[in-house]
Length: 141
View: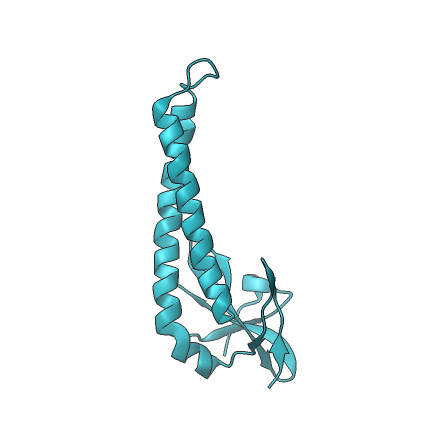
């Protein structure tokens, strides 16, 4: 079976290429990670919005305590998001959209390297697209 080697922080990971069948078997785990990722991303965006408002009250001479606390929460939420993405990457799955929970499973179709794609809310991995086309080129299997 062919392998792909995505660039990843800290080195190169090696994974077998996905088939739709294998991706669907992994989907319960991927779905749980993506649910956590989407929820944390929403929390992060809300925290960023609150931080931006609080930081308007802050000056170098008079830092705003709420802005400082929110900055720490924003950073923590970002670290958690990075952890979920790293967990997907460790499985050989690529996160393509935090807000909608979009992931790609690198695979092969008719001799070409493709991505089998799934997004939160879908029951199965039932679409694919050419590597260069992205979501816009999404087609049913």
